[in-house]
Length: 222
Image (cartoon, rainbow, N blue to C red; front, top):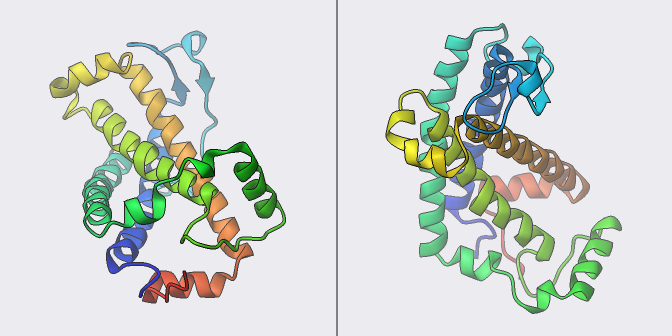
């Protein structure tokens, strides 16, 4: 039995491409107005809860400041990003990957079990018996798949100039356009943090095998 289903592998690499381009083009868009606010409005530095630095060209797409170009890249990748997430959720529910591998049990939420899992990670011991993922992995993947990625889609739609008029109810529900923009920023950086941790843990736990398994599917030893 394959460790990673074909649907998971296809989505993994598509999502990686989309997230990288969305993040880098988003930094370029941020350079146009590097201040974040809460509520329905905001423009001056005095109203901002966060003032961002100007991101250099090597971190952005395009590699020079271009609001129009960055928006084109952002929209281009937003569609496969959103449709890919929808596809992944449909596949996880149909092949029972979500219920079998990602749903946590009551025992896993006991503090003694959580503490033991944390200690194992700190010791770089990533082996676990009886399931494909341990508790911290299930929690992380659940937050990413169930909160952060859908949150990016929802807030991205809310601040899209073309969709904003039709989604005024959603914008009001989330506290106003500037709140939606701030949430979009927070979701993006939370995903970036997960990405860095994910890559670091892969590098610490047999990276060649991990990479090969995510390309070929590998074999499930559980």
